Amino acid sequence: MSDTEADFEVDRKAWDMADAADEQVETVTVAELQAELDVQAGGETDLVVLDVRDIREAWIEGGVPGAKHAPRGMVEWWADPSTKYYKPFFHPSKRYVVYCNEAGRSALVAKTLGEMGYDDVAHLEGGFTAWKEQGGEIEDVPQRDYK
Image (cartoon, rainbow, N blue to C red; front, side, top):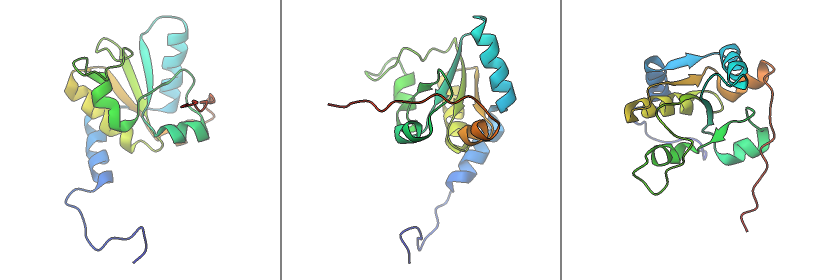
């Protein structure tokens, strides 16, 4: 058995869970997100583009310009003002478009934010992979010095 093989199966597979979440949340295309970003540039919306990839993915590949980063494992904590981890870019009055690499994690995050009371949440169809393939602008995400 290799390091990537297992001798068991889980009751719910990760992609099945992501697919189920995808059916329950709004999905936007790359073109639709670009249109929302154009409107936001005119100051007419309160859009937050939310990158939920691991920070190392963002450092290596870059990100959607102006996106906020919230690692998948911290979203619930950062979005909940009753926790000490709350981040002020989370507010239920804002519009969120969430993305990850291929749209699995982002579907799960969009569903979770909706369950938390964030009513205007979508995720990016195809994730950052689709964004790159369709010529979306990419912003470098500099690695922080953790010293």
